[in-house]
Image 1 (cartoon, rainbow, N blue to C red):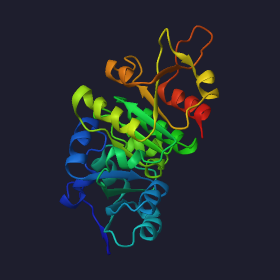
Image 2: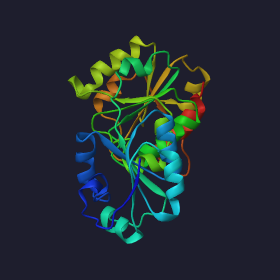
Image 3: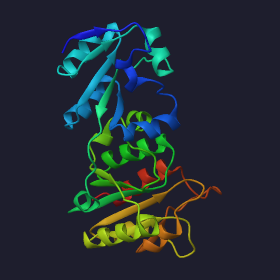
Length: 269
């Protein structure tokens, strides 16, 4: 594809990249328009290696050769630094941006089939925490990740960046809306796949993580909720076991991404 130099940030060919810092806007428009934004050559490369197709690439002069090597079949829009900043709303300094085709999400049953360790994220709205949880899942041996209907988008730019592109490495999908917030169907699917559902939460009858890990079921779905509110009643009711991380120093819990890392390490297959 030819390299096209664009000097006007309002050029309609750049619409996919406009107002990237408007989180509420991007949260609505990206899934609706079937796209997501990958940032940096490393992340774009991982997305393409996972089979995702770039719609276009936005790049500045000094990173042009990298972009041409990454996506030789996609149109490359070459812009100056000030055009990129006016367009996106921030100073682009990670080499390149790519507008990627958003793949269709698989069914929950297909994602968890044969899994020994699954991470389930309920209603975590912070994109940084979602990205960090995916990175932990990839690095600590989780076979899949499930996210609830109201969980932040794993393919949002910040989630992808924080995950270092591992969101393309771990199979994942979104639990569909339904009865009990989707938990009834999700619980049935997880159990049909042989997974023991372990909810990470504070409760009087919770089992300490080290004790649970010592007698670890062969297949585990580990469920974590948002900081502050924690897991919903439906999530807790769906659990076979409630598990807690023993804490010290008067601290009752960890950041959700840190908790995911600790629990995944303890339960790694």
